[in-house]
Length: 199
Image (cartoon, rainbow, N blue to C red; front, side, top):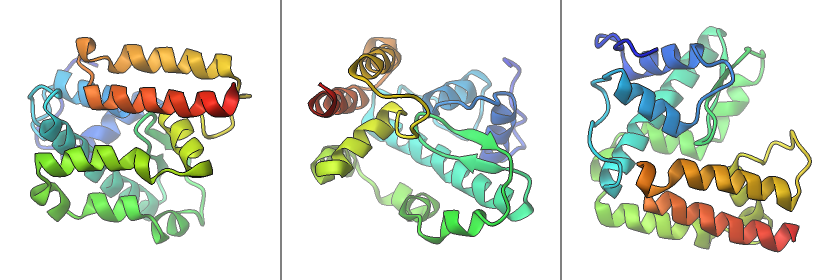
């Protein structure tokens, strides 16, 4: 797992190699750390505490993931489930590929490299600030559950389960451990929201 990635491979192929070695899936954070540990030349090797570096690294990884998902769907080899908390290769199910890319504004955003080139540090600040203000009512609850990776209903939800997940995420994304302050703020905000619904 610690050997270098083949530098001739495209970032999407490097991600595919990492995901094939982790059938249970990997979080975005784990993918970025694995790319850095294996000396991928496709992402910046700078501190993620800088918001613009964090954004650019995130964008490059998600651009490659969406390109990979399109390619796997086109060939029928596998399906790729993409979310920041779990990126996972799944068995291919015919008929779902078209539905996946039909109305996917995130896919359109990440496949447009203009969004990478033209985004400034101020834009990143605004993106982070606007995320939670856009969320109202059930959207707010769903966004918080998605951030916690608890939106797929695979386990019964209780405040105990949510708090346990909150502690895991805080530990994983704390700036003292290389995480980002903005991600930690989002996790805290999500916890506030979920406490209102599950207390």
